[in-house]
Image (tube, rainbow, N blue to C red; front, top):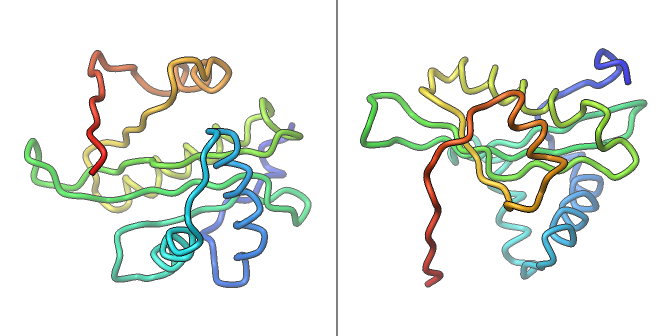
Length: 150
């Protein structure tokens, strides 16, 4: 795939239906679902300039083929913010063709412009296809995530 044929831009209000389709596919990929109220809250947060959550879309031939959501937040180890790449999804028909890389590179540029000290993310251990890309463009840490849902 020619990376120049992929255009990355912030998601806008007119992208809702296309975004929702990819968001639902992403949730299915992770074998989960969310209440419609949570989905609506996520969408509104992506568009609200007062909320430090941002969304980008990857467009190819006027089709939305990938999305990413990032969250900027302060941290105790630096004086500038971190960028958490919370969600990344690329449609099946273009997966493995560089769209994920272009989206992550956009996140790197965005975080750099926002003076963040790092971009970080997590993925499932068995997500081997994505991890090949991640291994090529970032460093895996030795941190293990623990979680207690409340």
